[in-house]
Image 1 (cartoon, protein in one colour):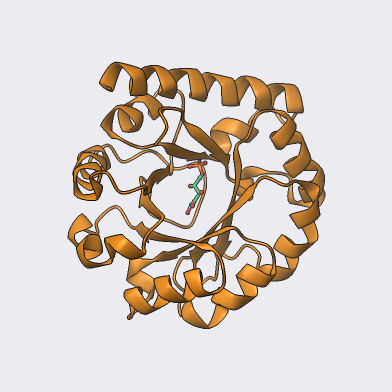
Image 2: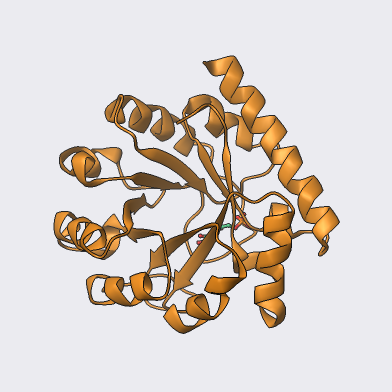
Length: 228
Ligand SMILES: O=C(CO)[C@H](O)[C@H](O)COP(=O)(O)O
């Protein structure tokens, strides 16, 4: 939104046995936000972590905790994730019957509200909730696992969402298969927040994380500038 890419490493690809240290390392390496992938083994075929784990790492950084809830039902858990210290809470449109109510509930607990769309979900589902939104998360893989290949068909959806939101201060976030090769495609189309797991945590050291973040940032900022 301000011409600079926000990089949000997904801790899904971090070493879970040292999660707090990994969060600190990736923040020192240049992360802007920390992306937290919460999976329930029901909405998606994988299980990760919940509010107690998020609470345990909250004091490791002051950076934005960007929480992506891949759980159904989602509404009963919004308060618990806010209490754990999440700043942004994103729900899947496919996981909530009452999207408008869920988005309002997120703002009611003092968090920014996001909605996520699976690759096959059309962008028209957000048309009537734009005023309740701080962020739209477009999945460029089918949710559930890190390390999957980027789905290029979603790039057109990024362009269409960018045009729908107009001048509203709503972030467009991309998640799945983001690398220094795919980042420019979505940045040129209008995305300003990039989530990356395997492309950032590969190498396993703070130095590697810094190089990986810088490579994605340079590629995406360049594409954003050329598209402006
Ligand atoms: O939400 C996710 C999967 O559901 C992950 O955040 C996403 O896939 C990031 O991992 P990678 O960058 O390795 O694709």
